[in-house]
Image (cartoon, rainbow, N blue to C red; front, side, top):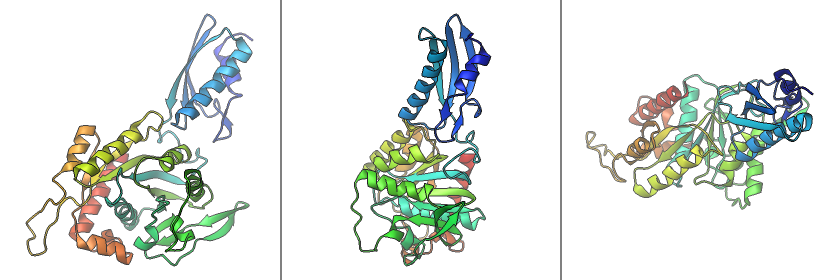
Length: 351
């Protein structure tokens, strides 16, 4: 076979993209083909950022070309991870009806990540968006409590011939959590692969429909769940939550670094500082920086990522979560105003 651009595309048309079940030429993943004497180079776009996925696609292309044009052919492939914007919703196999998938992460537990996740979801829904929330904190699920749906159980329905889980809904937010499938007093003792499988099912075996935003409340730290998530779900970006204290900031820095690794490569939309300060009701103009001042803001500057805003340490935010009505739904309070400002900032980062 003669080495021409037409024949190169013909050969690469036999290489399939594993998730889309279509060939890489039809999906327009091959760009800028350059030919030389017994030499070919081109750009290959891939949908998954994980290193093993990129290498598998590159090897498949190389094998197809060498098999058709000879093993002496020099093949130079530049692999690019296709941006989330380029992966249009109708192209995606997982969550095709969701426009933006946002993970909320923290390096350390107890910094208010779940509180932020629930308020972001409720605030977006209150603003008129179609919103879903996945409680991916497998070992410490809190979404059922924070949305006052502890006694609810997801139903199932047959969708396109497949039995699918229907998310629970409250305050305009569709949600799934491992907490719906376990007794409230039951400890969830699972190894990594089992936890990852349960998480994947909340995306692949659930009927989410059309959503503007899906918020994913991740477990703290950096581990199996996080790696499994980025391999299955096409994240639009991640938000990192931290308190101002140095021990939390050190772990938050690690979380940012993890998502910026080449094998993960998820845009960091910004950092949120929770429990930034305390203002006593009797001293409304006074701020006490109990955990330190502006630590997360300075971290964002050092890491060159956006700072999305700060939430004060307030009894009303804690009480709102405990009674199952997110604080952002309160009318014109300091807490709801701060959360809505953060929502405005992070939606701006998506544009």
